[in-house]
Length: 298
Ligand code: ADP
Ligand code: MG
Image (cartoon, rainbow, N blue to C red; front, side, top):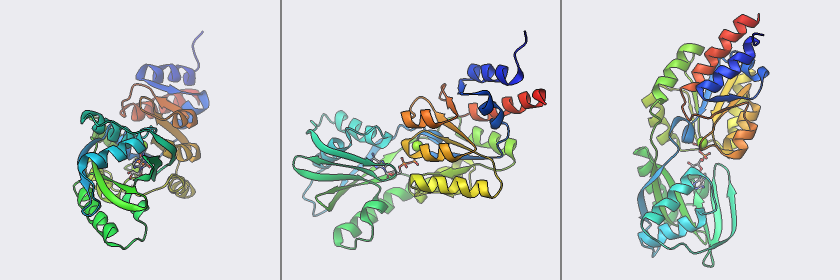
């Protein structure tokens, strides 16, 4: 017997390295007219590296102590930024003290008790809030400087006081620009970028691949808000993401696709399809497969 078109499309998608979870999903992929891409781990390789370690003057801390505190607090986290911080400490052979009371907030950062101190590591804009003291002002200047150069800046706070910043840099996936071009061609609209990262770094990266619609500094629920807004305007949105922070948007979207290799368990479970081969270019490929199968189904 010959396979129904949607089932052979699923088999075909599998050969392209995409696990499509059902025939319904295979069909929906072809209806998509707008694509929203997450930045870290989706448009980029998601393997950031620490490029800068900057203790704040007055913190009484050196680079090694700052990195040790940050890495200890990040150790339990599976976030790509956390892995990079731990790796930087490992490269410098810094012994990490054990931590207690670890907690993380998607899109913001982590907090833990390290050597009797309460250490928080995360997005400077979120952690500084409206603080105006000298340390906060200093931290904001350093953060802006790092972000202007396309870095992700991460603030380290110890017992309520900012003590330093880390700069991290990630690389675009090699197929990022080509994928954005194919998606623009297929849907007639350039993809939207949804990211929890800062607007400066996000804008620079977006410009490199041909994305104009950049929505940065988003918490997980803001990503959902952006998707809902597009869908209310009549769009059928495909969200592509990898993180715990992307899971609500993956669930809310017409169709959600997760990056499989480095994707969080929650993203993989929530998504309608999973990119197993770790190539972004498989996204336009499966949209095209679905459209072809749908023409055969009638
Ligand atoms: P994206 O949407 O680009 O995948 P996330 O929502 O995961 O990014 O993170 C957004 C921002 O929150 C990061 O740029 C960082 O500033 C902060 N952040 C989140 N998790 C962590 C963490 N474990 N360590 C440090 N910073 C974090
Ligand atoms: Mg991500």
